[in-house]
Length: 93
Image 1 (cartoon, rainbow, N blue to C red):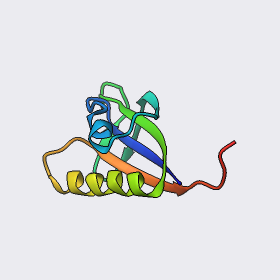
Image 2 (cartoon, helix red, strand yellow):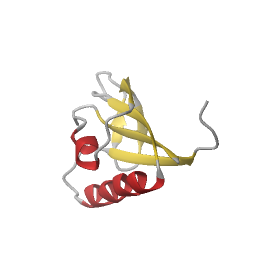
Image 3 (cartoon, rainbow, N blue to C red):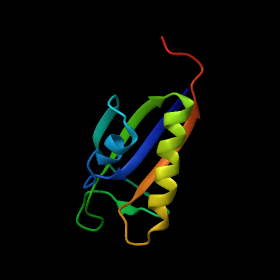
Image 4 (tube, rainbow, N blue to C red):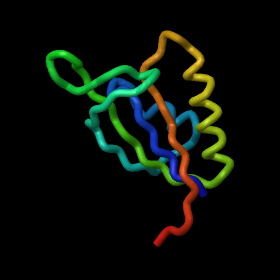
């Protein structure tokens, strides 16, 4: 099992989950921050906009499929910010 932490532009919908067949996730609708590849979004006058954060716990194969999709998506220079962090799941209680 893997816990995927996905940070993406809030303008993106959950369509990437539908493509990967994922129906269970937790969404934090408004997060702010700065990073390479996604720019700065602080929801203020200087750095407008917000990101969304998703937590998704998946078995190995669906996690691999979503990460493959993310790699392909990030190759396009004209894209919204989208980053995936992967953590090993030790236990679910």
